[in-house]
Length: 130
Image 1 (cartoon, one colour):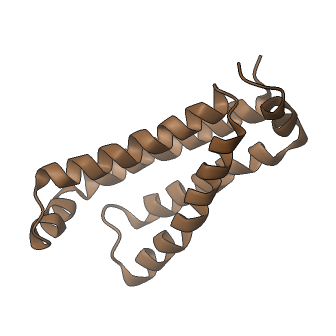
Image 2 (cartoon, rainbow, N blue to C red):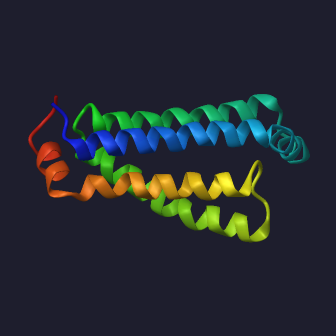
């Protein structure tokens, strides 16, 4: 049985990804417009969105279902690197979609990682796979 902290992590992180999909939907025209201005097509936008979503979802599931502590650290690093970029984009006003949703998404991602650093989660991750 997975500990409560792992369940909380999984739910919060997957919720943040769902908000990211809503963000992409709300800012779809702007995303496609920016890609076209840079000489990229719709395929490039879909590829980048898909890679980002499936990479992050895969890492989250490796942590929560596969007991992969290394995936926890990769996910933590990606979120730590991405947070300043989100904040800078908000400050510049270059976020596509909803600015409040972008803050909620970033906050959820950070909040989702905190339960991974509890003693309960560390012991569970250290105890091996499955």
